[in-house]
Image (cartoon, one colour):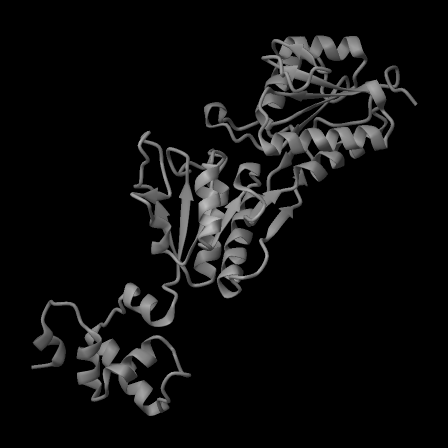
Length: 369
């Protein structure tokens, strides 16, 4: 009877491997965990141990390896969103793809955290005061909504984690990877200005999310740099925004277009692909020629799950480098695991501008030199 037959269907242990290879369990542990600095093992003995592992179909216990080596090669992924982004149209889907691909590339498993709830029934990192993320070596936090108190507690307890997206509520001691929407917005205004546009609108919403504020800051910086003054205006789409008293409030897409005509605007920029898509459809319905009569640009993919759509491929859009951000978050996390006392990593990734077909030089009759 072979050793495997003698063991039967029960889980094979390191003791079984040691017995089959005629070595101590310490040697088996050293070989399995690749800890050459712990115990010197000859190549012949290593080969005998690996042969026994293969014959017995031994699978190392991840938890035991964690205790032995300090790492179990598990990366956690957590989101406060109600559902993980399984659909390709979901704004967060590409982030998760980047995380998964980089985790696989670096030989790590990905553990999705979904179970814990707080007293209000919302997702929580802590369950009865216990940090559930500690099942993994470190974690990546994905999603727009966060609990600032929980994030700050993670940082204070020095649990290794990286956030996707900058969140002021998390405090300054948190590592994050984010798209550089400020620079992307300036890039858009610069391109329009180079084509001859001097009067343009930025259509914004009532939200005050950090990424939205970065877009507005980029528009303001470019407006000052090109000395556009009142020719570069803010338009609030929908509800009035008390934080933007200087902005003009419009109710719908048709009003955006009417205001653009009245202001002599030759270009309209919107905060998201969702809003610019709606403006584009309204412009076509009114018989406007895009981009001959009006140039249109969207600043980034839309992160609101209530307004998920596939924008018209003709649109010129700033694209969030989601997959690259996810992969960079994994690499940053692994670097922090190797150097836990290092300063927080706060990295902005440049965005890309798709060519599209909705941007051109302005009509001569409207261009102001």
